Length: 153
Image (cartoon, rainbow, N blue to C red; front, side, top):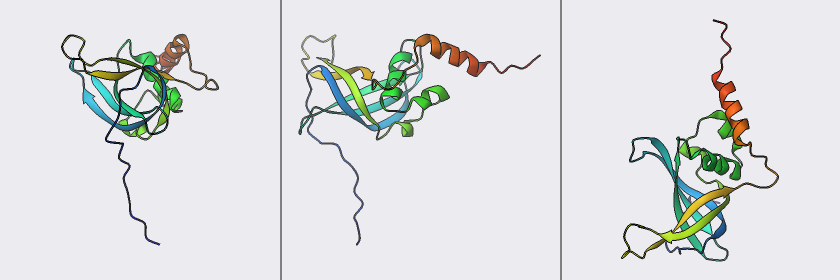
């Protein structure tokens, strides 16, 4: 039997969902440079509200102080915590991954009071209770060990 190759296409019509926790799937990820010139990975997320209700959101994974916690939670939420320990992340590592996240509903442009367009914004990723996510102190110790090569001179 011959099968026709099909490519998954996300639904064209999505909604802005109410704030809450939703299952998600990463449908696209690509390396980019932020406005401040830092490397980042932009991910495109499809949110599942049950039934045919779906939403979309983008998120940006930056390699800078302040975004470490969220990046780590994403990797553990999609069951790829080993990538956190490797200190290397590629867009291809993320595409097709599923997990659960917390989203808010907010104005797209907070500086423009006339623009009432609403979007969903991912505030955090939710890890399964059975997965132990290392705390910040354990993370710092692991990073220090990775950079300490024990050369005696």
